[in-house]
Image 1 (cartoon, rainbow, N blue to C red):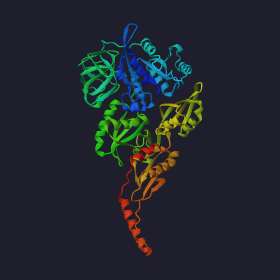
Image 2 (spheres, rainbow, N blue to C red; image 1 turned 90 degrees about the horizontal axis):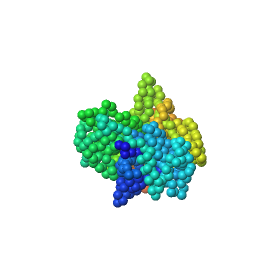
Image 3 (tube, rainbow, N blue to C red; image 1 turned 45 degrees about the vertical axis):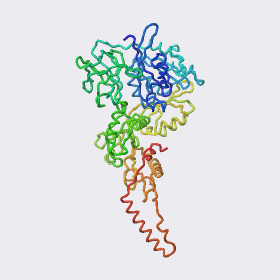
Image 4 (cartoon, rainbow, N blue to C red; image 1 turned 180 degrees about the vertical axis):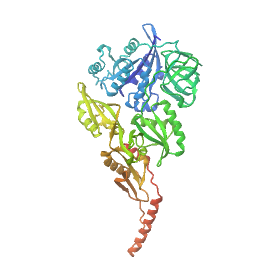
Length: 595
């Protein structure tokens, strides 16, 4: 155990942690030259295309220093704010962390929030300034920022480049010298923390764990504490580039277990594995339950695909523990699921993965957040869906979730960013200069306002230089109304939204205009209306496609023309009673991108 080091890599999105992980794997000869490719740990096509890490990946390296052989378990983590839950799980399985900061961009919001998470877990922090080979690099200034933040010595900071390999030996030496060995007792009863799981169509569910105490052997009879299920460990092993089976693993190690589990509900991330014969006294304190921030309905395009969608979501949930879902039905879209996501990028990724990995085409409704609705009797209900809102006459008041947002930016963009945040009903809590030209703004903002397009706007007005991080702060009372969209007097529940009273009229108007562009013309007039309760606040009409029935009448009495037009009018009226309006998939998506 003295020669085991477990560490993770934390950084803001795009600061080069996956590339640096490549160099570590290459330097320790974990990956053959023929297998080496850029971002070797990002194994999803989606991760490579977008250049982001979505999943944490664990891999074991062997490294010899001063004649001693060490085992290093590396966990690469995502950088985007939507995947911070993945980061919290990786941190729970480690004793140390490499904090990577881009030498040209400096410290960003996500760096700080991940750093605090690591410090809360008593991890040993090794600061690394990456990308020092760039012409735009400014390592001295970035080192000053790190010293301000961590209070460390300048000599503790390692300068490195994931591209050229500068500083890699120093990083490996620092990991071995500074990160403590895991403390645990190999002879105590088995206690292993599950920090991830994946689904394999041939082997069932594979759980990844870190052993805190005890030793596990192949074919041991083990028990999962929180579900109470018992299994035989058919195969255990460590995670190299592929899975490498072993006969036994003891305290301090990170590995995997395959025991032929078929249903996803039997494996919970954060659960403890122990022996059936000599169980441990208590489960390990796992990580906090994940709280979804954004809710949206996900419906199959073909109704008969409902069960397939359920199975696909269950398999996806194994791989992504932060996704939650429950069945719901809608008058417009049939049966589907109400899914909880950590943010909009997470929602987009889940949709994309459903299409690629499970061949499921789905319609996603307008995303919204969860509200606390108080009725006149003082009882509280949690509402995730505008259609679940009680009658307005019964509601006393509604509380919506507020977040504490931290935005780090260059001082040049402070004006437009403040205008954006205040326009989204934000309240400035404080602003402070971090160093030189960089400023941190702290805002309290309603989560519902930032759900749709806030992040994109922030990036565009700051030319990509502002970084954004948030956590749920509290619930506050606010004046919210349900905005319904009616097509020919019929409400389309999938398009209804909860919005603030002040924004409702302009939002309703924009929505009607957008739908007028997107819904194809029919044989009859279609009235698109936005309504709050019984009050119509906006209306657009899609004119009917008409055939010129009077073309064959030339000359003669006007009454002949009128007779034909009246006949056509009756037909249109009858058609309107039985005709239904198809809302194309584009219309649901367009509502997200209204501005």
